[in-house]
Image 1 (cartoon, helix red, strand yellow):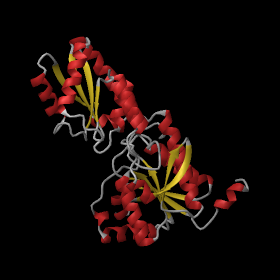
Image 2 (cartoon, rainbow, N blue to C red; image 1 turned 135 degrees about the horizontal axis):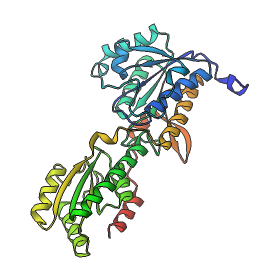
Image 3 (cartoon, rainbow, N blue to C red; image 1 turned 60 degrees about the horizontal axis):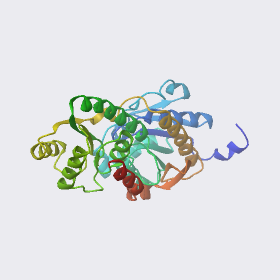
Image 4 (cartoon, rainbow, N blue to C red; image 1 turned 45 degrees about the vertical axis):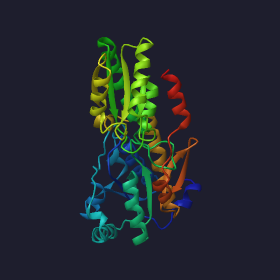
Length: 335
């Protein structure tokens, strides 16, 4: 250990790490990074199974550098994940705090999304317990970082699937509605749609409207397109759902043979891309170093390709807006 590293040797002697909420590719790489950074700084590390619920039930295990061998390439999370109703109660949080103290844990790294971070903020306020968040969600809907863990992998999964669907659409002169994840944010739909060359992209942030969508599809037909791909974010409000959209188009444009493909949870799974693995490694190191430097209630993220820290509450409340420049590019590309 160099003289520079000695400055991190403070009152934090043991750090726990958990994954919470929906899983995302890259979570295992982040766990690995946290554990090995702790080992590098001679700090003990514990893993919490099943997020906040596991913490309430005392499901903690020691982790060493060897505990996280051969997991960087794996999807999902070896620590499992869960959503906890009990943690929303004061009694549940009291139990969680007691289990941390019983295990002599001094600080906590939470890998998850806005719901997980909200729980962390409340926990920090109630017990002044040091917490750092690592953003792990495929939706990319956290402020303070250009990329959340799993977003790049989910994008590549969606584009690969759409490319394959296009082969079928072209072979049979069909119109495909492809639904991708994104309940409240259209980042996956917009980027995957542009990347896969979709004829239309429907996202929650932009209300295209049924009539405008029909006119766009008619225009595509007039210009010689015999097949089309419409990428729909699951949170889009153009119709009640993607199947209603498909029925509406089939009724009004009978010349189209319409099909629906919902990509669903396949976007969450699979081996993380190199980008997500490297990002997870960088964020894990920064998370541990911040805690050892007595900093808390922060989220680590990526901005201008540099790892930065953002106030945890600000990260939750300040959801990044959709890229208007990419929207403009999308409009031009669908001409």
